[in-house]
Length: 476
Image (tube, rainbow, N blue to C red; front, top):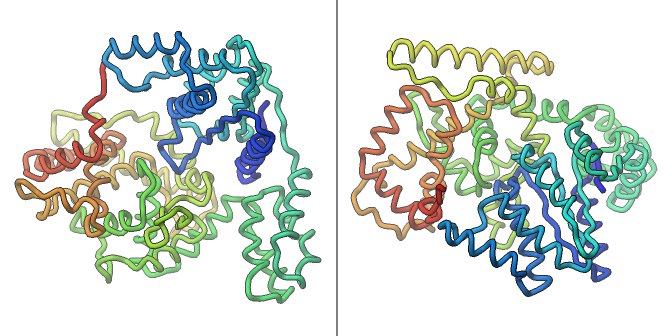
């Protein structure tokens, strides 16, 4: 079956609750959650690997057919499970061994390769098994996923707003610490329109130091009617800050949109200090205070300190997928029609082409801001996928070109030092960000100069130490 609901309605919480219920009954349960915040949890192959590993743990033995698939991969030079078709066949064979297993896949809509995901899941659903295999999916309500569910006879549970409201009411009654405000929770629930995400935000209002009902009701009246309005409100607040603080917030949002993996605060702080052009902003402080960064991005970005060792150096992530999508929405379809930047042999023609693309992007972002009813000052915070990747690529390139990394035989002992926190990320992913952007002719000149320098070979040495798998990709 599949649970369909709008964003912010608590689908991931529901999936976790179902998993915990099954595990408490000692039923074999395998869970995978697609996550836009974690690139290692956005792909089909990662989901298949995770399920295969869980099933291996359950049974402790490997079927002959699986051993044969492994042998075939070894003979073809591949020592890891990297092919989706092979991984699908491995999972099919493992499912045949089970007497009973429950598989939970959360966030179908957050998978990066949906065109690959849906056929793969369809093939697994149709696989004959000798025991009982129960599947539970969650997703936002989308026509493509709904059509897939109908095609494969997956029963859909579409969560009604009234049903969610009842849960939100119980949640707020349990979590609201102000006894004086308990009686207005019904009004709060009506305002939230079935969005658990909004409920967690409104809970902060209810649990604030003020128990003045008039102030709370005023906050409730001014509370945005939808998530886009909520995010616009945050950006409008940012647009009233000093210009250098606006630019600081813009760069944080842009880098986080493009980052290949979650960035820690120390990594982000150093990336922000990189000067990529003569017009780059210079911050009053060499490294911006973490309290300032957290204040600027409140409402869009969470500074996650929940993991061990993260209290002083938290991980930065968007509050919700809708926040990430909000900064990009209506722009990806525009970019997808332009393909890679055409490299003209004539310098004048190339420059004209680049200027035309840049003007089109700016016009598209301005048009989008107008459609959203956003004040002109807010438009600067929107970005495009390629634009964000280019900006982060340049930050990586200029960071790596720093004179301290441009000496032959650069020492590797500093890789784990906070003074070089951004070094590993920049060395491993600079080229990936360029490949996802539309580089200008000037960018190519800078890349060429970098690759002729000692800094490039130091970068290669860091890649070999930190991400050796990059040199072990098998091409059949």
